[in-house]
Image 1 (cartoon, rainbow, N blue to C red):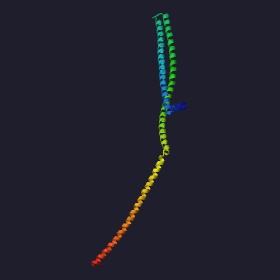
Image 2: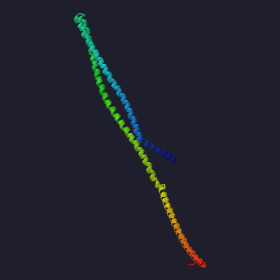
Image 3: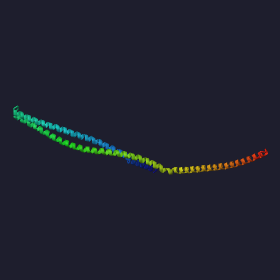
Image 4: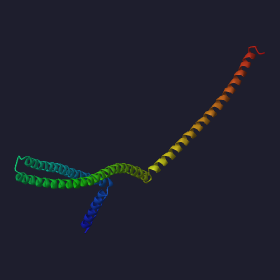
Length: 235
């Protein structure tokens, strides 16, 4: 049973880690940008293909119109030759009719190509608008990603600082600092007290020396007068 409980807790831990990783805004935004860029590549490829089909339809339409005009010119030339007697009228009419049929076929193909060209160009315009929207979205989320990275950096630094500040008192650092301040204050007061005592001692010694110096000077004066008297020099 204990083993099962441990396995369950490990599974829970891994599941929570996976959820936290999935919910990481930086990872999610980066993955979203990768998906958008893939969509943009596909859209650009599709847009290029649609534009190529529009160009092809335009070129085909021009070619069909040129052929239609050519067949019309040939029909005119055939009728002119028959009119000048250069060929039989019946043969000229037959060939001119065939030329006009070819002209009609090419006119129909040209019309179809024009319809296709218009359809492809309309699709290309819509896809071009979608590509522009995708580009704007990618640019917006790239800026969002920069902002998110900056916010994550600031939040991590703030968390670290606040965590350190929150742990200061619990770790006894503040108490230790207060005790050190108190000890230093006691030592400073003690040093000042010794200084005052030393100063007082010096003052007493000075008074004693001064008193002794004064007594010595008086005795010396009395001795001098006695010596003068002895020598008969007293005034």
